[in-house]
Structure formats: C-alpha cells, structure tokens
Image (cartoon, rainbow, N blue to C red; front, side, top):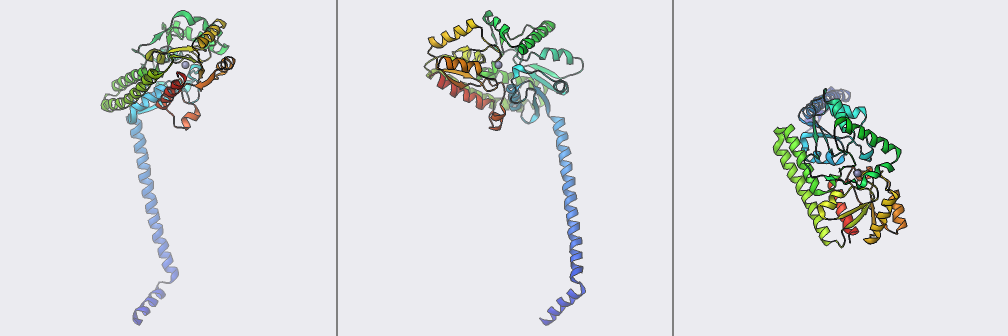
Amino acid sequence: MNKFIQLIYYDLEQYTLGGIMVKLRYIMCLVFIAILSTTLITGCGNDSEESQSQQGDQLQVVTSFYPLYYLVSEIGGEHVNVEQLVATGVDPHDWSPKSQDIKNIIKADAFLYLGAGFEGWVPDILSGIESDSDVHVVETSNGLDLIHLDDDHEGEEHHEDEASEHQEEEEHHEDEASGHNHSHSDIDPHVWTSPKQAIELADQIKLALIEIDPDHKDDYEANFSELSAELEEIDQAFESMVQQANRKEFVVSHQAYSYIARDYGLVQQSIMGLSPEQEPTSQQLIEIQEFIQANNIKYILFEDLTSPELAETIAEDLNLEVMALNPLEGLTEEQQQNGDDFLSLMRDNVNVLEQVLQ
Ligand SMILES: [Zn+2]
C-alpha cells in the first residue's frame, strides 16, 4: 500500500501539475480542432450538395396570385419551388408586375396564370418574352366552364376611379393588340372561389406539371388526389349548407362569388363590380336596395383586402349587419401569421354563408 502511494507521489513529481495541464490542453485542442473541422467539412458538404440538387431537380414555377400558388404548392410538393408574384396583403386586381417579376418569369421552368381576363398584364408580358425564354406558359382557366356576363354591367366601368380607369384602358389596349377578347366586361374570372371549380383548376395544374415534368407523374397524381379529396369535402359542406338554408339570396360588396352562386343554386347581389373598385351607378344602387328589401336581407358581406366603406354605408342606411366573406384572392399578413390557407378560408366561407342564409 505504502509503496503504491509512494509511486503516485513519484509520478506527480515527475509530471508536475503544470506539465499535466499542458498535456491535457494539447489533447483537448487536438480533439476540438478535429471536431470543428469535421463539422465544417460535413456541414458545408451537405449544404452545397443539398442546394445544388434542389436547384437542379426542383421545377421552378412562377404563379400570378395566391390561389394558384397554393394549388401548385400542394400538387407539386417537394418537386417544385413555387413563387407568387402578387405579394401577401396586396389586392391582385390592382397589381401590375415590376421588371424583377418579368425576369423571374423568364428564368422559370413554368409560369402559371389564371387567364379569363383576370391578369390584364399577362398578354403584354407574353408577347415580350416569347423570343428570349423557353418558359412553359399555362393559362389554368383554359377549358373551365366560365361565366360570360351579359351587357348589363358594361356601364360600371365609367364609374371607376382614375387609377383603375387608366388600368382598364391599358387592358383594352392590350386586348386589341394581342387579339384577345378577354376583359373584365365579358368573363367573370373569380372561378377559384367555388370548390367545384377549384378542383377543375387543380386538375389543369396537375396535367401541366405532368406534361412539363413527366418523371414525377405518380407524385403529382397522388398529391392531386389528396387535395381534391379535401376540396370535395368542402364541396359537400357547401351542398348540405345550402340544403339546410332558409334563403338563397346574399348581398356582397365585391362581385366575386358568381361561381358559388351558380354551382350551388344561390343568388348573389353585389354592390361593387367584378373589380372591388367598381362603384355602382345610382340606378344600380336603387336596384340593390330593392333587392335587399324584397328578400328581407339582414347581412352585407365584405372582404379583407379592400375597404368596405360603401358596403358599410349601405349597411348603416338599411340597418344591416356586416360580415366578412373571403374572395380567396390572397392572404392578409394576419391570416398568413395565423396559418390560414386556401382551404381553411374556404371552410370559413361555408360557415359565414350558413349564418347569412338562415
Ligand atoms: Zn375579385
């Protein structure tokens, strides 16, 4: 025993405390450097590999506005990198592209827009990029059962503010130049608001993705099935809500729900026109008031992205309540933060209409 303790003392004398610490520090240093360099090397390696493969494999898709962005994200899944041009909180009716947006379209593998005259800026861009881009351009409303308007609403255009009047003129100019007949006055573009039509849009998007990227056909079809099952569920909710409703008429500020009205047998009366800025004529205001009184309407439905001022004035005058129905044209910052999406807002619309149609 004594011998053993003596041995330890001997060892301690040989390797002084300072000597041990130096050795320890040296070893720790080596270990630390080894760990650090391994992390750095593997870390960097993974990062560059990952971003390279993502850039290489993922389809770069530019969409015009939120509903298309949502549908493409859901159907494309991990195989697509989707961008929406109209930013969160911005009304797509007022939007027009900046030069960076056009550059992004040119660089993309695919550019998906709605058509039906909704994006008045598209024909101009398409004629501009034809020669220097091989981007696949898809008009997603192509082949859908669109609502063509009668001539009753043509007068509305003259009552827009200067900004939209200017835009409208530009659109007409574009229409003439490109030979397109689409404009706000003959097709109602709000086709995405009805779950039945959203399924059709999703189907068009699925077909487009398969055509551009046939290698991932199975995934696109599986993602589409999942999405359309959810949309069919909402469609059923609309059907049973309408069956149980006491009335079919509803009054909205922005004329964005003609497809819901058509697909579920409801009657929409709007205060503003197809664009939220289109104010009614005094004759139309009289008709709206008559409609409200004749049908014993209790609510006016407005939306989040535009000011409900006129709707509120009418609501006040006629002692009506104001509620929000969502045209699903885009998310507000708040909705985005709350985790709302196209489907959750569509479900909210079922609940709002259920109350309004009681
Ligand atoms: Zn709209």
